[in-house]
Image (tube, rainbow, N blue to C red; front, side, top):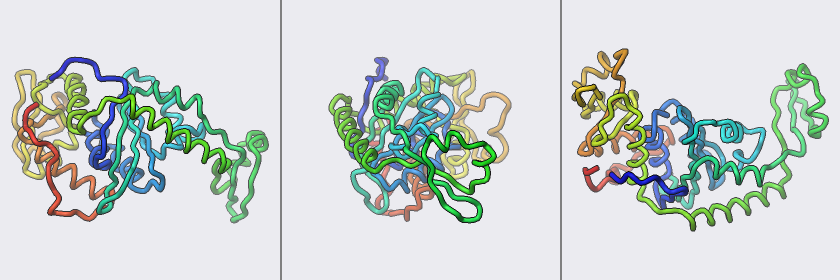
Length: 298
């Protein structure tokens, strides 16, 4: 493995965005808890652009526009994440094949994205409100901010309103910025970038083995239930687990870190494709279930 630091901006071209996103949730850290929500969001986004913010223990993916809206959860996560190694992943869908989104992914440090957000933040002009009796109304921001908490609690739903021309201008700027970042970026194959991220994840383990690929406990259980080989990382070295460990032996108080060998990545690829199809509501194409990793070498 190379020991040089990752460049500031990285580009993965024309990849299966769902598969890449799911693999980030299990190879760059343990983000399995957010995987279903994030992949469903990616699948149902009606626009071409999504952004994921990856902190130390959490990952949040949403429409790219929401990273620039102060009222949105994605904006708050980008603004408030203090983890020094936090990253942003920018997904751009170019096309769909058999229901799967394909396109480019940019990875950058979160500060790079923050700087762009600060320069291009979108501010709402008002609020759309619906009362519990079905009555609908709109209020200017000044009125909304002056309303009492009890008045807001009386609402059934509410959402911020953005001027259409403001959104259109943002879309134009973001598209240009994405293109500029692509020109600056270093290109990687998806498996190469994920491998380098996994090395970082492995090095955080209590008993790391950088000749293997670290996976979360939830993924280890899934692989064992499928009959795939999984290893527990012990102080004396990795130890292969029996399939029965999926129901009896994964939850030790200590040594709850797991890995697979490079030779067993094919089984991991099949699990990833199956879970991606399930979450994103894609009907499997059995003749296209091919592993993306041409070599078992790390």
